[in-house]
Image (cartoon, rainbow, N blue to C red; front, side):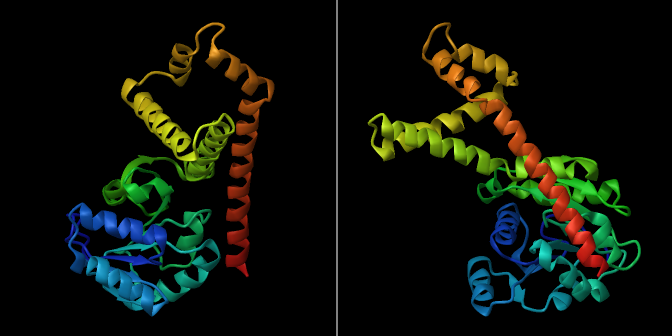
Length: 282
């Protein structure tokens, strides 16, 4: 096979078209990929029918068949299913097939060990804001992945947000920061909304205030290019309301709690990778 990176020209297969698989699929079509160059797999026939109706893509329950004609294969399966899927498709890929894994916690060397020699593998961590084309993806190349492969994956993931290329040893930290990050922010949003309700605001009003404040603050941070400390200090007048609130956050060690929580996510990501290796060795 010869991989053509022009949108809509190379054949691409999405293995496991659940929520994230569909997110990538729909983003690719919006960005110019031709539907007839994309194949998606799923076990349930009703799910395959949904995808065909929505996007006019080919669907099949047969992973090996879907991979056989693909230039690029994107794996979007649960970590515990990865070894089985790799064994299923191993006979259908070769050194010209680019394999991209969006499976959290599964290292590229494990994937390479279940596939034929010299198959290029690229590992990706992408987060859920990809559903609105605002995802953050970190891309890492395996042993046989070239700069061209990384560029190709960056183009693919660009359909659903931003990308950054990092050495694979940073993927556990990426998982802890941006992979799990939306949940941390949703937790803060939940807390702020509840505070608004306790202060007498209608829940809908509190929600509108908090969501727009979060969105606007993120946009300001990106557009200004300034350090968040600088922006925080501009909001914090001496002896004012913000200073009083921040004093409480510091007294309750919220900063330290966030750091500890993210370290726990990092450690869990490493543990999942170790578990995946042990399972593959059995």
